[in-house]
Image 1 (cartoon, one colour):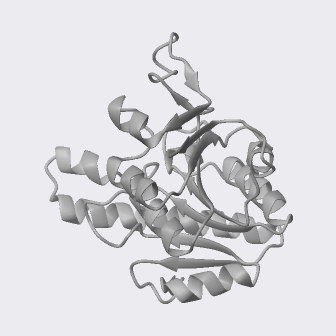
Image 2 (cartoon, one colour):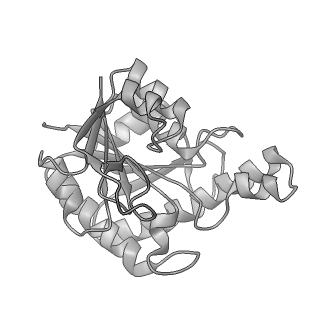
Length: 235
C-alpha cells in the first residue's frame, strides 16, 4: 500500500514509557524520530494523541465528577501531550502546527479544516489537540473524524501491542493475533480496537485502520513502506 497522507493516532498511555503516569521524554523523542523518518519520505502526517497518561474523564466520572467537566479536563490533557510531541518533533528539524478544537490562542491555532489541509500540503506535520472539542467523544473518534475531514488514506493506531488479538495478550497468553479483519468482525467479536463511534465513522467512509506496535523503533516507517505488520481493518 502507498500512502500520501496518514493520520497517526497515539494513546496518552503510550507516552508514559516505563513510568506510571506523566510523560517519558525518551519515549516522546523516539516517537518524534520515527515520525520524522516517515515524513522525510514525502508522506503527509497528521497526529491525534490521547490524554490518559495525565487525566481520564471516564475514570473521574466514576469517582463522582460531572462527566462534562471531566471530559473537558481530559481534552486539556491531550493538549499537554500534543505540545510535548510538538517540541520533540521540532527538535528533529521538522515544521509543525498544533491545531486544537478549543481555542487557546497563545499556544496553538484553532482547528479549521482548510487551514489544516494547507499546512499538510506545505509539508508541515499537523497535530490535532483537544479531541473533537465536545464531551462524550473519545480521542479515537477525534482521530477518525479528523482523518475523514483531511482525506487521509489511512488511520494508523500506534499502541503497545503489535496488532489486534482475540483477547488482551498482556492478560491472556492464549490470545491470537489477526493479520487482517473486517469492520463487521470487529463489531461481532466486540474487539477492543477503537470505540464503536470511531469504527463506524471509518467504515462508512471506507477508511482503513492499521493497529501496530509504535514502541518498537522503526515500526512506523516499516508500516508506511507497506510492510504487512500489525493488523489491518477494512471493508
